[in-house]
Amino acid sequence: MKTIGFVGQSGSGKTTLIERLIGAFVERGLTVSALKHARHGFDIDRPGKDSFRFRAAGATQVMIAAPRRWALISELHAQSIGLDQLLAELAPCDLVLVEGFRSEGAIPRIEVRGRDEAGPSPFARDPSVIALACDEPVDRGLPRFQRDDVARIAAFIASQLGI
Figure 1: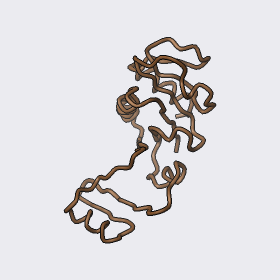
Figure 2: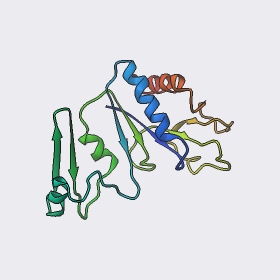
Figure 3: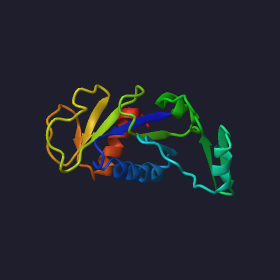
Figure 4: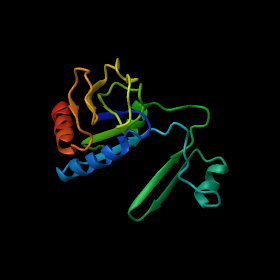
């Protein structure tokens, strides 16, 4: 699977850009998956629901299934899982867009910078960053795209990943 990551500060527009890129690639006939890093944990379940109760009782995995959608919740307990292991869990597809996982895995990344971001980037020396998506001029010797220029960013990704 071809994979590209998006990094940037909170509020920089990463999610919006990824959402728009998914649509652009799906329009091209590609199957696209997305992987989002949650720094502070998350819960897709609600107390009182059966699946929540199964997990609370100690189930390592709980699958919730409906006719047109399913979700698998895996409790890792004391262990953690890395980007490469998570990517291996995804069904085969043409492209995976990854948000976050700043320093995990050997994947190319695009840094997304918000309008109000000034000063040096925390990713300035990151060799995995291959392009910038930002509205303000930044001199880093990398290809730079306006954040809303989804067509050009998609074309760049397709060219870089050979899709």
